[in-house]
Image (tube, helix red, strand yellow):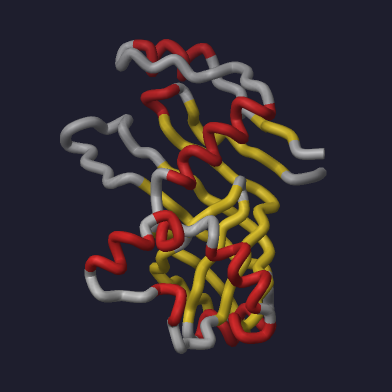
Length: 186
């Protein structure tokens, strides 16, 4: 059963943050926190995926879409694919632009640890079509047609990457979240 972990805050930290009009949350329901995370994932579309093989880490910036807390990526080839075939445990981040000179406490983002699975688009077209239906591409077919692009007829046999989260850490001090963590299971 998933759960939410809220780090404790000392009285000294609370007083310091209060000077900046920040009050960290002390409780939130699982449902409220999952909705917040789902909404965050839906309002962004770029992540930084980290993989590792033979003690050699790799980070790749990729476009994604989501359904619930699960994210999907399509990719042709590359070192990340080879890494995930050997080690499906991955991590990724999604964040907002951050300008500390304007607001030191405005950093916002998520850090996710999860397990990746993959298949080739042509191996399972039905599953691809289901996953693709969650994408902003499927939601905006008319916009692509206006550009002369037929998304559905792509000849590429993409790798479809699915990442199921194990742990998600959320940071948004202005809204009272400092490293509040969702865990899939204990």
